[in-house]
Length: 337
Image (cartoon, rainbow, N blue to C red; front, side, top):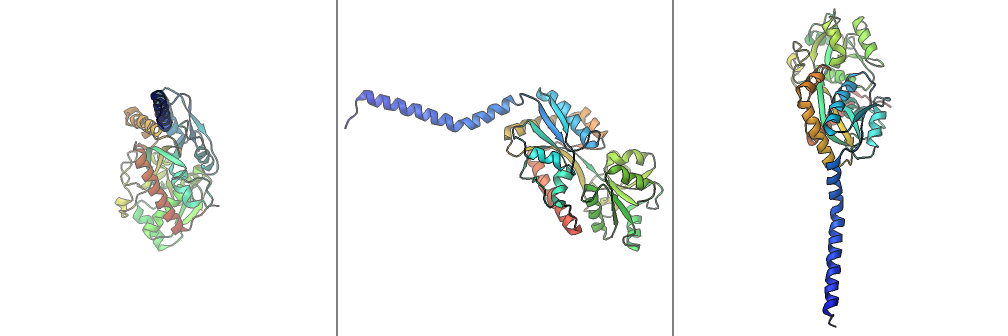
């Protein structure tokens, strides 16, 4: 049967309209995401810090948040959500809507180390987050009492080998970052140290200064003032390079442990599923902030150095860190319920 030319024309128009509608439907998600990234942000961004106000992580977060808000044209508000070894705040971001309006100030403890020691952690640092940028890194500082007989790493190792288990080290809690760093050092040196866990930084440092402990692996921010005052002595740092705030203190690599490298870090992460264009926009803005000399100076005052990498580089770094600390925790048989 032949169709009338008018009917054929109508059929052609219908097909064209349907085709255009289908193309628009297929393209809609991509156009929406592009538009969302172009307009982002249109309201306040919340940066959750899973640590108490006043500490090093909080200071880093506020330095970056203020400048990021200025650059994006919307406020970036820091919210301290503490508790359970930073698990509560970290888990909250893992469960947040992936729209770029809830971000995490990640840190080596909750992201790299908690997965290595907690049996029933409710978040996965790799699957539940979209890495945005690594903000800073810092070495741990191997500190002893200012009047300690251990003036070098070699002297401490010799004493530990002479009396296994007699040399004590304090940590800020079982399964914490400086606990695992100390176990990593003991394994590298082939020595046995006696672990004395504390509930936080202050009591461990107090006992170290009073002579109740032999050693603490401290973050530089917590140790620097007492080192400069002579109450503590820094005998090594744990990174590949010397610390700019303690330039006269050798690395452990320079002290006979050439492969030793352990650093703490801060970074920005978003919930998994956050659009790539939004992640890229955040990354670009923050990398520019970290390159600014004023920002670098403010971060240096917190005894930490600006980094500023890509999301892919940050993601690869996290994977490597989780694998490293998981191996160390397994070897030392460290678990937290």
